[in-house]
Length: 218
Ligand code: HEC
Image 1 (cartoon, rainbow, N blue to C red):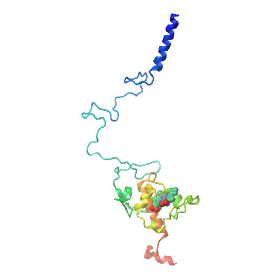
Image 2 (cartoon, helix red, strand yellow):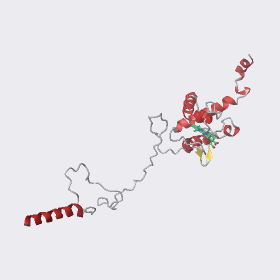
Image 3 (spheres, protein in one colour):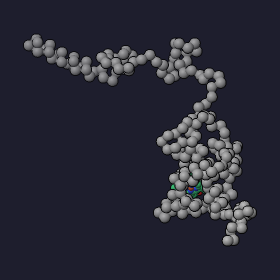
Image 4 (cartoon, protein in one colour):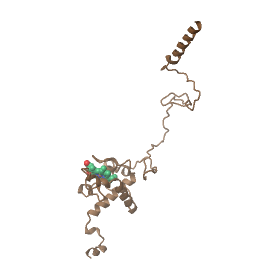
């Protein structure tokens, strides 16, 4: 009988030992048979430091440190190349603006490779809505997308380059932003290509070099 009682008490104690202290906190380290690397000397954010004279664990930045922007500059899908100009300070280039004013001309040199790049990017990202020639007759409009403006409207023809760049970057009204998937230089390439599209639909005889005009009348 005594053993039965002792056994009963032992079981009760065991239950209390296992369940009774659940949820209680302790400052002592738990016993860990396999510690992995759970416990390492380190400082927690905002914690006090006994090492640094000012007692701060989070160190203030040393004088002369510069911000890290890290925008990608000219990337192909899947292989972003980091931008060397980490600060992205050049407002005209990165934001299409100087102060609050949109730049009227793209702040990069427009040459044939850039236009080709722009055509490629435009056909990938924009033509579905704006149409390959910019007449707002992309495939999505056949499915009911409304409000896409033609690039050959005078309003967009006379719009500053920076404003178009800004529309690509941030979107506008019902048009979503493309900044996250079109790299900065590619946006300017697209702007340049849109200008080429506009000229292609709005040229006059005077745009043809005098020496070549004779061929027109043949
Ligand atoms: C999913 C369809 C769609 C795609 C893709 C698209 N757009 Fe648009 N875009 C629109 C619509 C809709 C509007 C009219 C927005 C509004 O209500 O002002 C618009 C407006 C514009 C405007 C005129 C903005 C203004 O100030 O009135 C420009 C410029 C433009 N888009 C350029 C682009 C370029 C460049 C691309 C490719 C990077 C592109 N869009 C991709 C639908 C699209």
